[in-house]
Structures are given as structure tokens and as C-alpha cells.
Length: 92
Image (cartoon, rainbow, N blue to C red; front, side):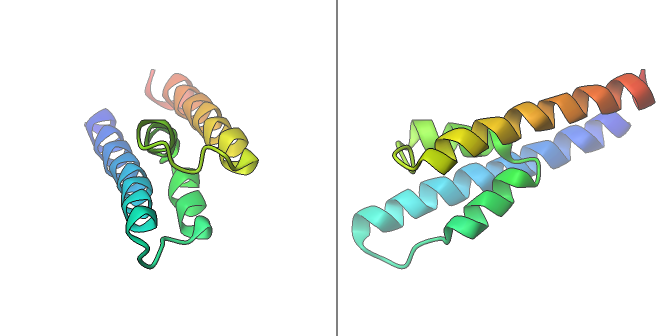
């Protein structure tokens, strides 16, 4: 049951992170108000690293900023490590 809850929470946070990246790209193209970089980073840092990385590369958004290219994949690696460690120590 715990794995289902964790999986659902991860799915939601990554969908939010991906959606924010896609929405910001759409706003950038149309010249509308944008999502702040701080909000994009917070979404990726809150276990939305995969959604942020996918949004960055599938939407071709924020790929020229070095801090997005470095920290979003770093968030993903750290989050994967934390999830693996949590599974290993608590749910195995």
C-alpha cells in the first residue's frame, strides 16, 4: 500500500513539474506572463526531477541555461538515490 501512495505522489509531482515547463514554454512563445524560474526549481526539487528533465528536453525549454542543465538532472539522480535508499531501508 505504501508503494502505491509513494508512486502516486511521485506521479503527481512529476506531472506538475512537466506541466509547468510546458506551460512556461507556451507562454514564452506567445509573449505572455511566465512561470518564475524559482517555481520551476521548486517543482523539480520536490521530487519532480524526472518531470523537469523531460519537460526541459521534450519541450526544448530552458536548455540554454547552464543551471537548469546541471541541477535538474542532479535533482533526478539525488531523488532516485533517496527513493532507492528509502525502499532499501524501510520497505524491503
